[in-house]
Image (cartoon, rainbow, N blue to C red; front, side, top):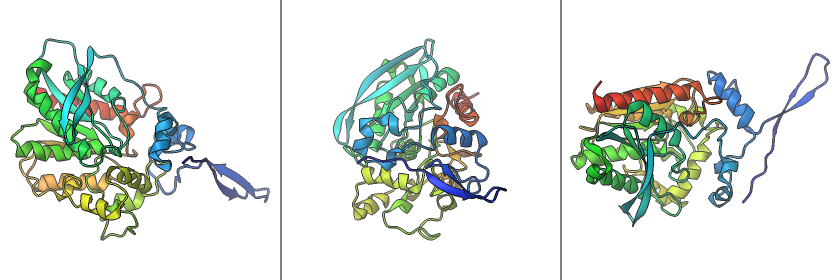
Length: 367
């Protein structure tokens, strides 16, 4: 399957009285509908993103032929230099196999606190380059090791493989603490979007197995995607999240994009999707207990359809007595944290880097 670019048109009538047709980018932002959206993001998107074809507008097979064609990479970068980087293989169990992890190490003798990162991409896209810049910044600024996990993805490895790959990676880090020169008493986890969902789930796994985490960080997390079922007509009963209703047509990340991810992660059969979404490890808001979880930090974006489900998850943690902090980044779209190029990125992305590096340094060094 291939996609073609078409432009929207609108007609204006200037003072001359002659109607003029104006061609708009196909993914142009309706500024009246999205009042309050960060002007820096609007300029960036309309200049470099509004005529692109998003990954969710083609098949996964088409996307894989040329991922860069369907990716908004202009405002991203590789990140700063760090003292040491190495890749290792980790044995995983569900199903059995091996995955890679990339380990970023700051300069010094160690042993180091360690943070495991689970990248975003809807359990379908992404890899070790997705959040490499953030991992590098955190390594330098927080003075901790970062282990970036290259979990297996759908459709070849559908739900719940990615979750258990990340869990196996966490246990591998603990079991190999001496070899890795890390402090097994000072471990945190986190991830963006799909990675945030898996971080939520792993915090429950860790509690139940007696593994103490310093923090689990959920960045624009997908905690309840039951509103994505094919054929579902949204209303306030089947989707209580106002952000979904407000931003389901956002050109940078509409509801159709979420459904595209689930089609590959959970399969196309509606009954199978529903069966998966009714399980708490797919839908963390359904977890049987939120008590005694590791401290949590949740990051949401104001103009993200997943905003409210992330904040609702924070409420569930708070009501259960778990320690949780939440920060909403004003004016931002879903994956704003990726747009961190030093010359053409977003100011809010750098704010996010500073916030998270300070938080991780504080929880690991108690300063």
